[in-house]
View 1 (cartoon, rainbow, N blue to C red):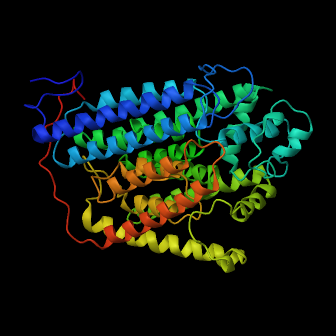
View 2: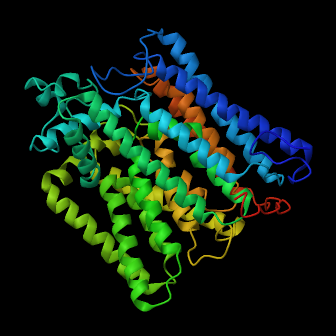
View 3: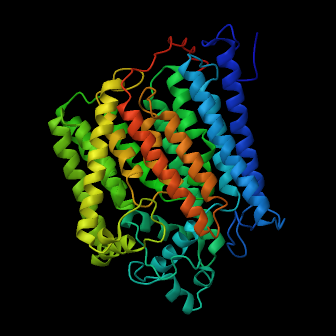
Length: 498
């Protein structure tokens, strides 16, 4: 018996008929999610799609959908995505691996290209990036000048600045700012074209990450399929990283590049040094794109504890990259980072007012809670999970995954696109007890916060409840001591299938 193109028959796939039906239903829901997201974006400006100004290459028609319609559309797509991923993960737990990994890679790549050509959706952040890039391209300082100030000059890009964050200079690092400036240089005085080049940049970063995690996940088809559904063929990752165009994808691509280098075996001292320096430079660039990636980079350093030369050279490479980036950007770049802490309208964790009024104590509390959470997650992963999926590799990524997950779930501000910090890294491990939980968390936050343009206070209140519930679930998952059942290994593909 054979299945749809790219799917092996029940006689070839492990997991039995139930696993195959579950997986096919999940894959079908992923396809529905992509189609519904695409339809909502193609309909043009609405509560889902921000107005980006005239011009540009985006494919759309002005359907003028009501907010209630796009809310239903976008939330339905998020539900289908979350449910579809969970069903495929469940099938994989039962030994199914009946779809060729390259099929999911190709589907994810084609969807990413499509989402690049459709209007930006779900957030106005990419419009802010365009404004900051325009300020930089004009030779001004985006760490000092605000979008409102560019607006008052009559600049055509500044005139389209979103009102949210209009009084805030950029809080992103010099690497992200350089990417924004490059897009602005290519796009000129057109908001639409700047946004397009930003989306192209994010497309490249997304696909580069997809290829690297596919290579790193090992030769087993089940491991490669799991990596694909967590990232490459994950409609939520595609929507938030490419369609919505969040800067997190640049940082995680750089960090994944560092992991890729460190996972390659070096056979000489010179090669070890070169790998360490290059990987450190990429990790430092991730931090210089978005400073919260300092925590995953710390986890990466802990993963190298048994490789002292790599640890030292990597630390030197990271420190040099961050230092050079901020020296070029100037002291205003460092000063601007502290201003994000003061923007507390979108806090997701119940931080007491007494802490928010004392910035030093506030920062120390967040740091300590993140480190403690990371340590607990590392302990849990160490007990449950082998160091890596697939073939033997000289890098234990469990501390990296623990710190990446902790930095997101303990962040005072949590949006679904922040999950990019850990999803591709989680895909490098064999299945974990946290897989379905983090997918459900991302889907629920997406449902609550969509359609995304003009988010209401009630949506933030609902998101805070969801975050607290997930925190409680995370504690329970860490305390639960039974070792998960390991399914029978799935048959390998032939070289032609892989």
